[in-house]
Amino acid sequence: MKRKNRKFSTGATRDADHDKLDPEGFISPIVIKAFAEYMHQHRIQSDGNLRDSDNWQKGMPLEAYMKSGWRHFHDWWMEHRGYESREGLIQALCGLMFNVQGYMFEVLKSTTKVKINKSKRRKS
Image (cartoon, rainbow, N blue to C red):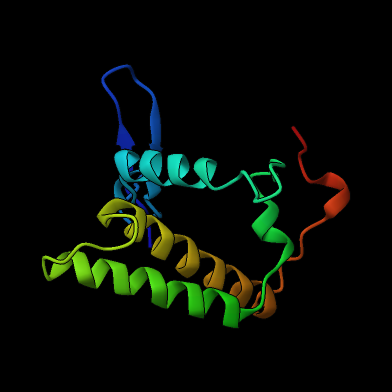
């Protein structure tokens, strides 16, 4: 089956994009900004040290994500019902987002054939 190309007013052409993943459309920049601010705020540990932004990718047990996720879900639920929560609605949603992402990351690491080459991993 022949694919239809897109042609732009400049003359440039590209394959049709109807069957390609569209992260720009699936993800909101304001949500990502709020999440990044939440994550940055939580980089400071109780001993005052600053953890790397990708520290969580070293791995955590699924149980830790589940228990924390439930606490954040409960805060979200409290706010949804009109009650005050520990840290407020946006913090609850960001905390839940972190735990869902972390849990999913661990599941995907264990089920995917793609392995991370630690020597080629970018360091800032």
